[in-house]
Length: 184
Image 1: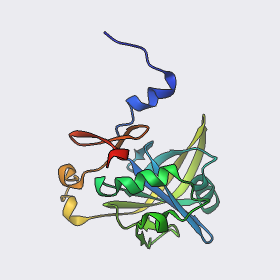
Image 2 (image 1 turned 90 degrees about the vertical axis):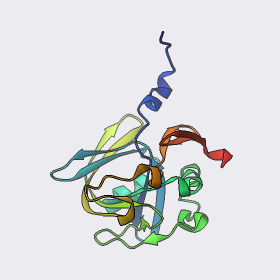
Image 3 (image 1 turned 135 degrees about the vertical axis):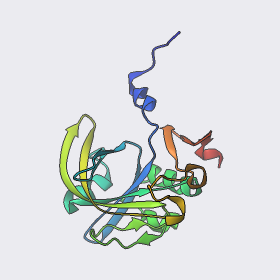
């Protein structure tokens, strides 16, 4: 048997991809925010897409700078990831508040997150309106990974890496378990 669910929660059926921390900088202001709606969209050229609401501060920074970082967090920093999603970068320095470490990027001005196991440097290719979010397509200029967590085929060792996946609200999952972030 099946049951109907609220349409506003339909996205949770697809929220099984890894949560990323998107970082951006314009002039002297930088910011980072978790994004569950992210996906690779092309191998050649390498393109990724992130869906971000235009009223978010991170969106403003990306739109003005034309670039962003995509950072892959793990369970080890889930509290910090959740904090970044619950607080506005307009009002606080999220790096300072969470003690996450900035990592200097090679091709973009936005900092990357050193505490993450993988990082992408992206230049905005195109932005598409998509309802209450905009879909930002970024060309990947550089990708770096923690070498001990990825094999030669770049398959992540999920059990060791413990990437986090958003289920909706305050609930996340890692391979094999569901986690209430407020219970950590």
